[in-house]
Image 1: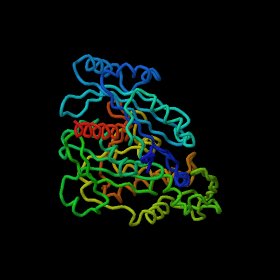
Image 2: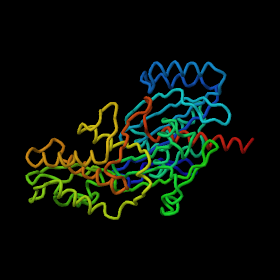
Image 3: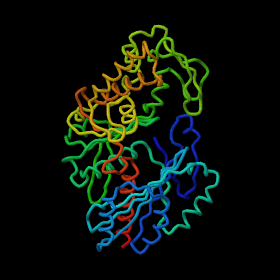
Image 4: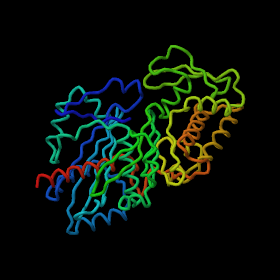
Length: 405
């Protein structure tokens, strides 16, 4: 679960619980929805970086759209975590009753994160209020894991061109973070909606369409939290050495998690590493995940640690991504675990992590032959929740304005 701070007075406080959970301290959303007459002000924003998310071809397309007689507006999203702030500046055009067209994105990462200013909220507020952009009363809010999954689903379906044809060609989304993991898709069969727990179904309206998604965030099943659970440890309590069958028997080391250093070692009977590790992982996942039959027949994109682990072991290209099956993760896990028995790896967790991912996907209901698409970018745009959240916020502002008028 990632966090955006929200209350009626715009005050910002950091939950200390987030630190031991190893989660982002906060996510600060600041969305700007401005008319073309304010376009000059964005030149200062675009000057903060020469790096854009679109190449020359898309830049020429952007210039063509801007010169046309189309309304232009912007969304600025601040993804503010504990270690840094990632700023997305999105530029859109839109005609009546159409989904906005993304014409340009500027991205910049800065340190420290906005959360570093939690004790000086007034100063942060003054900076935002002095900007030329529309700053709504609700631009600071808490984003739970489900909201994050929904926003990421909007992003990937917009970038794949499926947002305007809901239910026909939409794709599902899998995200594996450090503290939680999300699964989101648009059910095509009624039985999925009828048999799923109520908290797994979420509805929302956007751009004159209503979506009813299957979306759930499993707090504690993110990769870092899962590591601690597999090791048998407790958040914030490094009072004993943690022993795991996922490490070689001769392994001894340390692991830092959520600002706590844990002593870790391999099990004395550390032979047949994969079999022992998979048994332990299965115990951790037992009855923790809701399985749906429909996922077998839907296309899915997988992000974050799914991508990173696959790239690290050579299953996909580190820059371009690629497609692979659930079984590819399992085969890689077996190979790495077997290799570690005689030749310890630089990353001591690689056997555990790959085993966890392969079994987690199967717990979700994916067969071993299921093909997943792994991508960090689609058409040179980051596949993060930021774009989807911006779309959703822009639409809510538009509906508020329509009610007033």
